[in-house]
Image 1 (cartoon, helix red, strand yellow):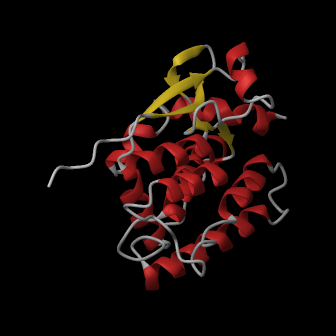
Image 2 (cartoon, helix red, strand yellow):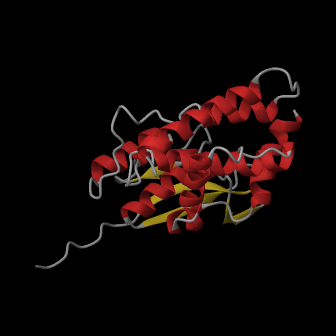
Length: 221
């Protein structure tokens, strides 16, 4: 039986490093989309966009100047990683990475808690504890459901959370000398598992320094 021909490559616009339009940048939402495409084995072409100097062609397809945007159908560019990943799943259902509804929100508050703590200048405002609470909840979930959010197999929830955890580790380590507590052993095993996947290594920012540079304006504001 002849194998099905691969589809035409989809096109996806993602963040480039400021001033280096040929190097992939530090956007966790862009990496989420690239992870989904990689894990599904979908051919794709990346268009790297320097968001500090947005080209006219990009503003025509993304008037708000945001990434990621994905082109699947002719001349139809789709923004928003939530929408993009859902459309990819619907259009390319095999292999399925659907996370069951009861697990889809696991870890969903970690990123906002991380950002609040990162920007905090008051050690007593509770932002560190709020982040710890979210990480502890993830650890408990992984203890009984792991190694991934949906058990043995990676799913969409992991593709969303992995880049955010990477930013958390790099940015908090640099700006606050903070790391995920050692007693959260299941979270540590989870991040190691995710960060070492071929798809993650291929799509992550080219250097930790780019992640640090991306957060610096928010930390210093």
